[in-house]
Amino acid sequence: MTFFAVLIFAGTADFLLNPSDTYAKHVNSIKVQSISRIHSHAYAVKKHAKLYTGVNFKHYIQAKHYLRTVWYRERLAKLTVNGKKKSAFQLRSANNKYTYWVFHSQVKGIACKSFKIALPAAGKRFVHKRIGVFGDSIPSGWDGYHFYLNDSYPDWTRKYLGSQPKLQNEAVPNAQIVGHEYRYVGGKYNKIVPRDISVVLKHNRKRIKLMNIIFVHAGTNDYTNWSGAGNLTNVSRHLYQEIRYIRKVNPKAKVYGILPISRFGNYGQNCGNLPNMYGYTLNQLRRVEAVIYKSLGATVVDFDRIAPRVITAANRATTLQDHKIHPTSRTAQKLGYYLAKWVIRQ
Image (cartoon, rainbow, N blue to C red):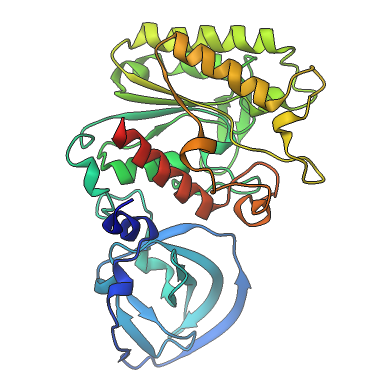
């Protein structure tokens, strides 16, 4: 990893600077109605935003020093400013060095075109690549309780690769390799959508034809007890048919088969060698998936190898939102970063 790449990952063009505070223009009336914790979510700041040093909103620094910085919200303040209701976030930089308050209207999502954090090694190779994603809650951007709102780990991968077309993320929480279910999903979906891989693929046949890079990440829900997915032979048969379908619809696309990430039981036990009710372990599922992906010309991605220290038994309480399977928003950024670095090297 080059020094410059480290700066981009941490969103830390800021720590090279030491800007001094500036006194804000007078605010006639500001009242803090409430301050509360809020679930973490990544943001960038707008070009002319002011980053305030305190919730009194008197002293600030200019956002121009932080345009490539990744921020995570931590607290929400509900305010009345000059008689009008407003809200503000307390943001912390991804490298944990800086904390500021900023009005909600002055932040933007990391998916926006103006937020540019492409890794130098990517060059122009991926600028026009259309990236598609199929799978379950992990690539969909669901932390077990909330959606990340367009900063799932594939969103980060797209940003670090420098791809400009919008990410086509068709991953859905609770999706399985086996099954043909639809389900209602709230949040960013708020409608009934195809859930399981087979129906999602058929629903998106036309979109698949336009994709240059396709990520498939599924299997953890088939491994779950009472999933109805059956034995490992049945799961592997369905996965084979689904990857073959993708290859048939778009034989030119670069397909990446991503193995299920580490997950843990109710008491912290690693599920890698823990048999489920159907008689196979998570590691056995991973090995079978890898064989199928390779047999159909897909490239296998194993996060335990390309990012071995991101999720471990020792850090699961901080890297997984539910301490079991769903990454936090910060973990999603790290997964996306390491996946982009790995893809660039291929």
